[in-house]
Image (cartoon, rainbow, N blue to C red; front, side):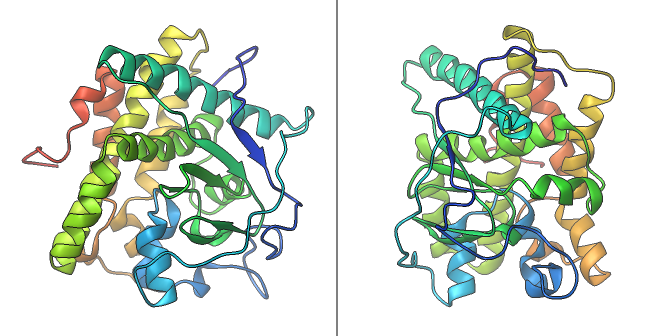
Length: 295
């Protein structure tokens, strides 16, 4: 994936090293660090991608309400020499262009999210965000939170290397922001509270698969309209990333068995399928997972 010369977003907040969260510098596996063993097996599928902090942080704290947090630390624009920060800023800007056009075509106005870079942990409007949860979107403050050490985890632990896989991560979380703007997040949260656990999980799956589809639609429109190009193997890296964080794959790796009724994000095949549907069509209209009979 080459985004040389692409415009950067002005909506990136760099809170790394600000002291806002503490917690020791991101992902570390092994003694003394944040690892898979610190997270309940039931949440393994939740911490990787597309996490809704209102749900998962509530589970971690024992209730469903957002936790009170100290004010976030100061933030500034990423340093000019930080190539990885520049890349995610370019990706964020490309999502802003695409979704501004999509909303305009529907007679609406797109309000872009902020993307906040942090290390270790960070207070959010949805509770304290931890690096071990992976990237996440908080609807309470309309921010995407990203500890970029997760990209190393993707490559080294999940078998999902490559810049386009990283772009997919950002685009997926922005997809959750789009859902929030459209009122889908509130509707799904309300439905989950009324239903059984199995019904709540099923709604979560549809929300996550739609965000995957939105990421695919972004990729199709952005690379054709904004002039950056995909290189051989780029699509495969994104599909591999989607496959590696399917509920069935994660459960098989973490517990050795699959429990479909506990799925919250969809199977590997479903995640790949909905990303491909968005990419092949380039249309968010093709991403209505809530009315799809078969996922």
